[in-house]
Image (cartoon, rainbow, N blue to C red):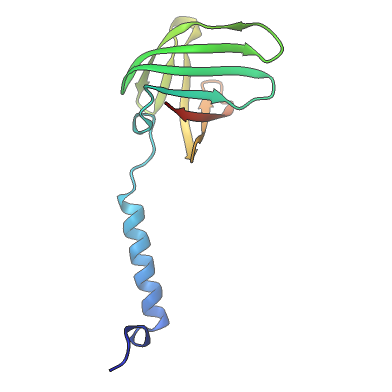
Length: 128
């Protein structure tokens, strides 16, 4: 009796592998701000000159963020700001200080986002 590996032809093996990969990709949830479960986490901006750390408190779609903002060689401020998830955006602050971040992609503990201004920024995500 032939072994299973001898019965599979190369095209059949490729088709089987493609089907399995396709099923795995289909079951994968798209990464959203809500799927990241931000409460208890810290976002740290990766920048050589700016400091931006956001410590999230609250529920899964909103609450308060304790921020550390400023420049690495200058003054820092530590406001407590409201945050919420609005559609595809993470919204931090209020009034003229409102900042929207659209999630572009997530790679392990790094995420890339687009600010309201269009600037692309990278953060490290630290889970508590």
